Length: 314
Image 1 (cartoon, rainbow, N blue to C red):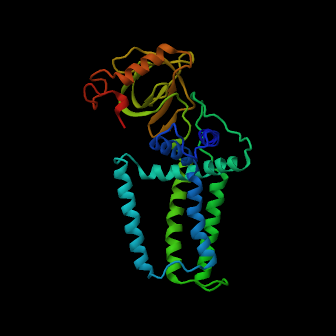
Image 2: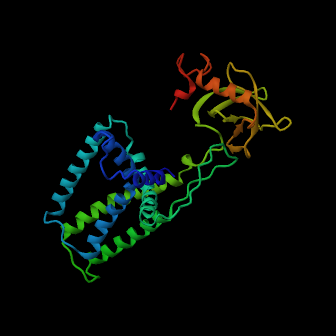
Image 3: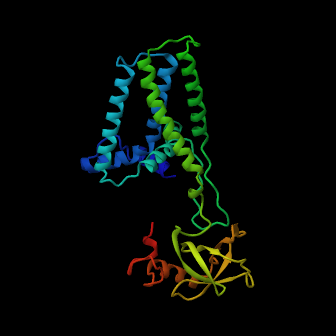
C-alpha cells in the first residue's frame, strides 16, 4: 500500500525531473524516498547476475579463488562497517537483511504498476487484537527464488564435474558461488523470519513486555510472564477455574480488573501457562493496565529500578 502510494507520487509529480520550487536536498529526499520501494528489484538482480554467470560459464575473474574470497570479504566487511557508522550504529543487520527480502515482492508489484498501471489489490493490516495468532505467509516469488537457486546450485555442481556442456574456471565459479551463497543465506533468513512464531499476529492490542513478578489471579499467587495493554500471560501452579466467564487479576499495587481466558492453558510440568485478555469494551481495565505499564509503582517489580516503567524492559 505504501509502495503504491510512492509510485503514484513519482508519476503524478514527475519526480524524475528537478523542480524549481524544490531545493536539491528536498528533491533528493523525495526521489530516493519513492525509488526506495523499488529496492526489491535490485535485490532480485543480485540473484540473477551470479545465476546467469553460473549457467553460462562466463569468465568473470582471473584471480585465484582464495585471493578473490579474501578481497570479497574485506570489501563486504568494510562496507557493512561503514554503513553502520553512517547510520549512527542504529541498525540490526539480521532485521535489515530480512526487510530487504520482504521488499522483493513489493518491488515487483510497484514495477508492474509503473509498466501496466493496473490496479493492485491489497489488504489493510488489522489494527485490533485477534483471538488467535497467525504466522506470516511466504510470498510465491520468494519460494520460486529458493527453488531456482537450489536447481542452479545443483546445475553448477554438475558443471564442475563435467556433466553439462559448459566449462568455467574455478575462479569464476568461486566468485559467482560466493555471492550466490551470501544472497541465498539472506533469502533463507528472510523467509524464516516471515514464518517465525515470535512475529506472528498478536491476539492482543499491543506489544508484549517480558516481565517476571508476582500477581494475584482469583486471589491466588501467580507469576507474570509477559504483559501488554490488552492482556497478559501468567504461570499458575494449579488449575485455574473461571468465575462466571471472568477472572479477577490484580497487578502489584494496582486495582483488580476482570479478564477473560484465551484458549486452553498449556501444561508444562507442574505449571500451567495461561493467557488472559481484557474485554474489548472494558476501558477502565485498559486504563489500569496502561497506567501500570507506563507508570509502574516503585517496588511493584523487584528487579525494576525506581522510576523505570515496565515498558522500558527489552
